[in-house]
Length: 98
Image 1 (cartoon, rainbow, N blue to C red):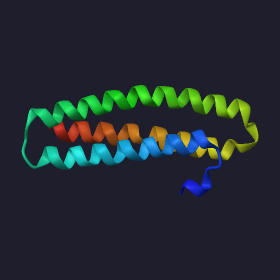
Image 2 (cartoon, rainbow, N blue to C red):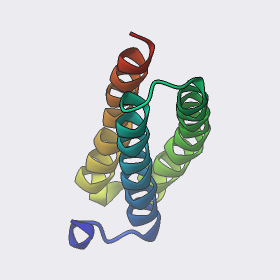
Image 3 (tube, rainbow, N blue to C red):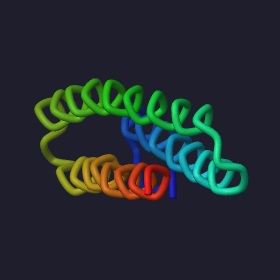
Image 4 (cartoon, helix red, strand yellow):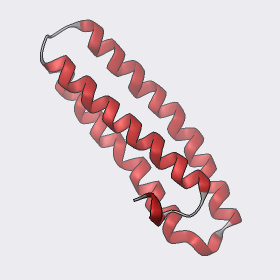
């Protein structure tokens, strides 16, 4: 999938998004086996750090759009993949608190 992205920052953002997705999925699986508050707290910390990283990534994407406006499709795909983790993380938090 990294072949589709030619800009360095878009590839880095996708790696971070993939890492957060895998980490949150792993935390969900760990939290469902033994129900402990520790994994819930770690999950919330991961989600809050994802919010901070996402804000920084949105600024980077905006700068890339302004600098390389001809590659708008690549920037749009990066933005969609970045924003798509929010509902997934919210779903995981819902499962952990239910």
